[in-house]
Structures are given as C-alpha cells and as structure tokens.
Length: 336
Image (cartoon, rainbow, N blue to C red; front, side, top):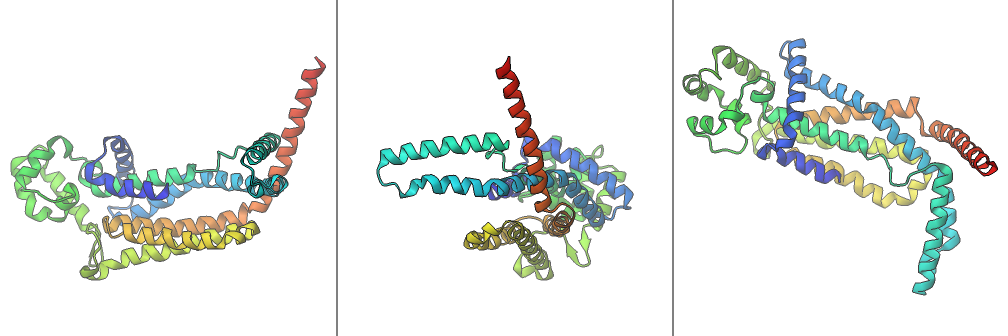
C-alpha cells in the first residue's frame, strides 16, 4: 500500500489529478502564509510546514501505537488458540476445515472479550502521511498557481503555445526558464502576469536555491552536487526505519522471530525512497529528508513519554473495566 501511494503521488503531478486540486489549494495557502512569516525563505517555511504536519499526525501515530500495544498484549492468547487447534498439522481437508472454523470462532470470542478489532490495525497515520506527501508534491510542482495565485489552469493551453512549451512539468519548467519567458508572458497575458506577479515569481525562483543547487531540478547523477538530496533521502529513511524497528523489537520481543522479513523491509523502503527522489524535483526530496528527521525525533519522544509497555498496562486496566461493564449489562438484561 505504501508503494502504491508513493507512486501515485509521484505520477499525479504530471496529470494534475482533479481530486487533488483542493488539497493543493489548502497547502498553497499554508505555504503562502509561512513565506510571509519567514520573509520568503522558502526552505525555512518548508521545514516549519513539515514539523507542523508531523505535529498534526502525532495523535494518529499515538493511536497506532496504542493499537499495536493492544495487539501485542493479546498475542500470547492468540498463539495459545492457534497451538490448541494446530490447523496446519491436520492433513484431512474436512477435519482441517472443521478445526479452522472452531479456531476462528474462539478467536472471535477472544476479540469480543478484549474489545479488539483485528481489522483496525492503525493504517490511518500512513494514509495521512501519503496525503500530506501528495499535497507537498502539488505545491512544489504547481507553485505559480497555488502559492503565487496566478490562474495558470484556465489559460494553460494558450500559455503553453505562447512559450512553445513541450516539456513534462509545465509550471516547474516555466519557473526554471522564467527569465526567458517573462517578456512574452507579460505581453500576451498582461492581466495574469502583471509587474507585481512577475516580481513575485522572480523572487520565488531566487529562493528555490540552496547554495548553488537549483531545487526545482530533478536530480541526476550527471548533475553534480544535487545528487546529495537522494543520498540524504536514503540515509534519513534508513535511520527512521532502523529507529522504528529497534523500538518495536524492544517492546515486542516476538518480532525477533521475523528478523528476515524485518531486514527486507528495512532495505526496501529506503531504497524505494532513493529511487523516487530521482523521479521528482529536488525540493520534494528535501521535504522527504526533513520529514524523516522529524519522524526520528518523534519516535524518540513517543518511546520516552508514551512507551508501549505503559500503553499495554493501561489497555489491560481499560479492557478489564469494559469487560466487567459488559458482564454487568448482560446480568442486568437476564434478570429482567
């Protein structure tokens, strides 16, 4: 699912998917406000924006951790039921089907007693992160429309014809070559590209550099120092994955049995982010790096102040109260 979301996010900017445009507009207004606050320092605004989005996601991440704590708490009971029926050891198909049905029935009874829904495994945070990633990609690739408020969409074909555009990403390439296009745009579309808007676009472009690196460019090995962005994506993604794995393993020793699968995931996720960083603008990769660093800090904070073991203990108390309440309700209903 994670890979599908990332691929969709990376490809959506080329087609300008209509259902994402409201998201681009909201993110554009946020970035516009931050640019005003930080005096057009684009990457400082992007860092703050990343931190704010992570803070918004924090409650969802905390809920996910609590869900995992509940799952870990009842895992020994699940394993006990699985061992009791030992379905995989039964060779007779009918007997296996019968044993499997009985096991599933006992599992459902366990879930009911514990107030646990196995289908609710806390995918919300991941989905929200992908939504934020799509929004970030949108405002990076459509800055003239969604941050600088120039109505490019309504005049896209005419503008493309005027500047003889035949590239892939319309607004980002217009921004890259704005010095060449600005006179044509001011002459052909004076109501859109006023002197004020042209100054705003030039100022925006000026702040899309980190040192000598043009962050509107898509990184390539032949382009020199810009490859540092995908490399940093890889390093920070590995760091975030390792941190998450170590914390989960510490609080759930049973994960040690899945060491091989864990190692595969530890390698695949960062490598995939490394690949994607070569497919999108360097500014997207920069956002990804900052997001990974903030995620590492967030994981450390959650491990220190919201440790899963305390969550498990709290879940045990809450589940005991809930179970007793249900039992009392059943007794009262029967007495009537």
